[in-house]
Figure (cartoon, rainbow, N blue to C red):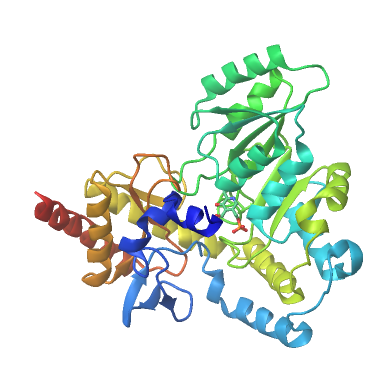
Length: 404
Ligand SMILES: Cc1ncc(COP(=O)(O)O)c(C=O)c1O
């Protein structure tokens, strides 16, 4: 059989939705400056879909820094992988600033979060190690674990009793030279709840393991000074590897892992996604330094995001919508309707109410879950919230009414 035919006949993952949703729910084309209002299908929409928590995407100082760096460096420099010819003073400065921000001795800047995580796990884990991870972890963690070949055990989402029992089993089975890595997230990007870092760190009193936290959605957003979920939960030192990406609040690309100096030094020479790949263009690095500076020095951006998040979540809950147990700006609305109805609901919100939010289904979230996902940002206003709080339940009732 032809391999192309075989692949395209295999209906799997989100591809099963393609025929019904392409261009609308999946691969929609948003146009215009990134912000709370953008153009979709020729109409102005109120947009709740972008992880632009602090509104940095279009912040004037960010735009100015990006533009100046693009003019100075262009998109080619530096050429080659960092190890061979692509190292720069700007990269070293960014890494020192990131380490300082999240409270670790050193940090390694990575081209992308997804590849970075896969490659990090490739270095950390061998077939003679154990990895224990929250069942709701992001695909980059799942894929990295799979490729590592390590003995892998998951625990049900945020179930610390089960994690303890899994660690008991692992302790019984592991050989003396086999190490244990526990992985969770700071903020889970779909449900908005936080990994129970404090309780996981407390398990170190009984079990010997290192803790890796992917804080993609907490970076710049969580904690009194925006350093992330470890700061929020007061466990900066108990988290051994702090991982995050600029793709969310940073409104850019690039990621980083922060950890003890000797380990970071080893990662620089062994992470295959970095050693065998060209470094990111210099303007990205310069632009990321500006973003980090604003995260550090403009607490009002974080406060604005949280004000909108609280108003939106309180308002939607008061209307009887199910937001689960989010404790971050990520605002899920769990739907009790079949997939076709959920697609109709999203389309109604977009076509008639001009409200653009995301719908999420398996395999992005566990099987059986269908949810909307709204991301409040520093760019939204209380008027945006009022409009949304009245539109979402109204459109929900209309779709349910038509289905009955
Ligand atoms: C928890 C988590 N980790 C990693 C990533 C990947 O980051 P990047 O977009 O930088 O590849 C994401 C983005 O979706 C994420 O949500």
